[in-house]
Amino acid sequence: MIEENTQNQNIKLCECGCGKPVKIYKYVKTKFLVGHCNKGKNHWDWKEGRVSMNNYVGIYSPNHPYVNSMGYVYEHRLVMEKHLGRYLQPEEVVHHIDGDIKNNKIENLKLFPNNAEHIRHEMLGNKNGKKDMSNRFCLICGSNQTYIDKKGLSCWLKKEDGFICTRCYHKLH
Image 1: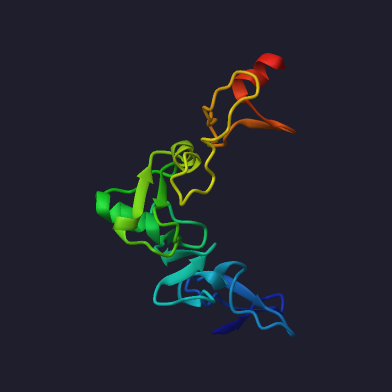
Image 2: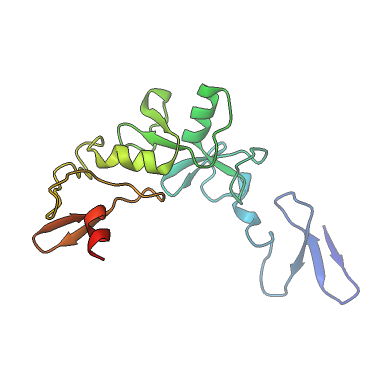
């Protein structure tokens, strides 16, 4: 439905179904407001409600309390929520045990209370041997403890001949 407004500009309704007006320009075919074309069935990768989001599977769930700006929630989070019978908090992290981020079976998912705990799990070599920091030793104190900060980052200072732990680094500086 195209209407002409008082300023001689053509206007129609956004085709995503939001009901907001869209200006129609002479040489550009405009169907949606900016960002509205990727919502729901209009998403370029739509497969019966499933889309690819950063290589993870996204499910269109516009009424979910922690939906992204486009109306999607990661499928692995929805699977864990259904299993637990509650919504996940934003800081909770769902881990794929086998490392396959498209395998969203509940048997392949593990919940961590925050990213720091998830990173700690990763650093201890629990993901097919990747990111194993258990073999690092501090050049000063000899400790092999990997400290994880509040952001979930491991704290080792790389030196030419090895590593220095966070505690020793702070004592030196």
